[in-house]
Length: 143
Image 1: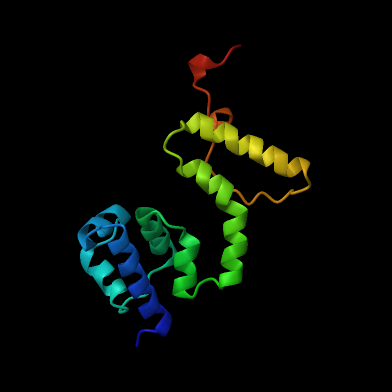
Image 2: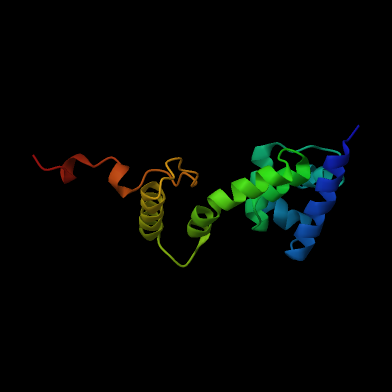
């Protein structure tokens, strides 16, 4: 019933959870999934969606691409390419020591350097609207 990849994924998740010194309940809470569902994933009985894998990766503080490879969604070489392309932006967004405006500024500078060097495709994660793209409250607009 369960594919080989799903079992491998479950064992990998369990190992990552234990390495992070998290209980099943703690990881389930951090990832926003139920304890029974996470237990079934770890035992290879359920195949999680890419969205759930992303939530688990975030809670475990590992790359989602790593889990995608374990789940058979990505091949290793595709994951390496994706990881290389987004690692800078992901690192910036994950850094708790800098503020959101500072993160936005760094992402914009990095994107401009990439564009200047001929990298017109922007593989960086979408950080959402920056301060310059957010709606301006009516009282802040000048006539």
